[in-house]
Image (cartoon, rainbow, N blue to C red; front, side, top):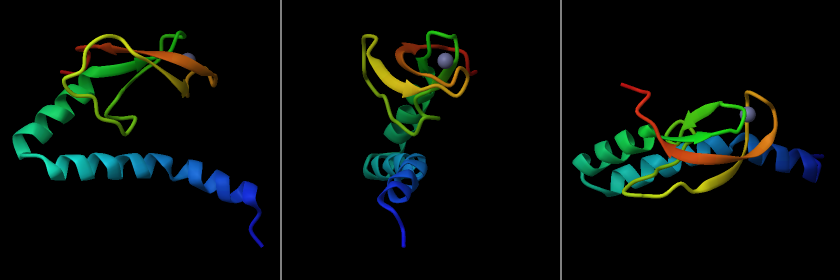
Length: 95
Ligand SMILES: [Zn+2]
């Protein structure tokens, strides 16, 4: 018998897969040139942890396109192991 807790845990483990399915779905629905621009922009936007660790929105499984400002997201950080408010910033680190 599978406990509810194990079930929830499994859901969290598959979350990254679900998000990349979201990317596939969105990029399939738009023209190829838009999809390329979405990926490029999502790769430039990074979620930055206060500890200094940063990951691109694309690597997180998300899409950020034609967005401005500096929103914040509540994310677990693999570097410091804490759940913190990550600032979303435009970085040109990946070239
Ligand atoms: Zn961190």
